[in-house]
Amino acid sequence: MNPSNALIDALGRQHEPAPGARIVCLVPSITELLCELGLASQLVGRTGFCIHPHDVVAAIPKVGGTKDVNIEKIRKLAPTHVVVNIDENEKPTVDRLGEFVPHIVVTHPNTPRDNLGLARLMGGIFGREQAAERWCAAFEAEYAALKSEPAGPARTVLYCIWQDPWMAVSSDTYIASMLAELGWQVPRLGKGERYPRFEWSQALVDGLDAVLLSTEPYRFTEAHADALEKQIGIPVILVDGEMMSWYGSRALEGLRYLRKLRGAVEG
Image (cartoon, rainbow, N blue to C red; front, side):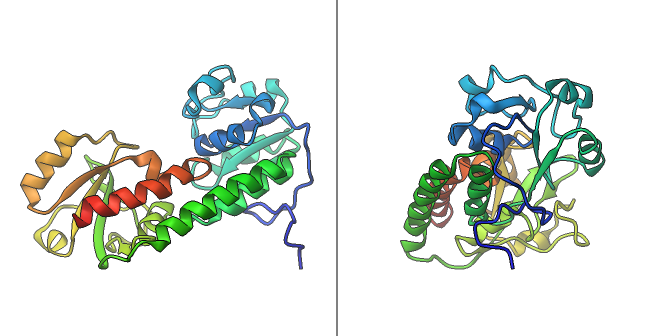
């Protein structure tokens, strides 16, 4: 049995404290969290999608995208640790990095409360335990505020992330877990894919209370929402994709955002 404070990543690998680490982070939301914990000066590389906090990350070298990572750039940066995510980064890339990076830290938060473990893992490995605990206390306060509100009726909402082809999220995603905090569920689509493609049909629309169009990864706009609402005849709401899908420090704002979203859907 591992002690409760063991630094165990998503693959079950134990890490040791490394307060002087040289860090490359390939996960945008975790880059933001590391900066929140006071680790910006130890970040030696990030992806081009790691855009928050803008003024801080602007000085950190880019190493490609989350999928098209520049291996040689990372090699030249000589990191001691690379932070990756099971959904965001591809295993062959991570395996190649593991050939020369001493420590690969794998993350995989699936629910809002997984952010507590994520913050403690980052704080514990990189010597920012107190900052992580302060963040966790703030998260617990926001979570308690969300849960203190009266629960609304159960709803089924379709959360769309792409069009041409249309794609949505399934129930085993972080986004669906965020929606579940409001008592909302997403419909079963496809054949078990996490981000299934779908076609609009009357049967699908009849089973929905609302459609949510995310501002990322596809850049849906209010114009898209207005046009789709006229087409299908049920409420269609534009939602901030960062607030719904970015874990790490953005999750604090995400919990507040959920409270606003509940009001928008339930009127």
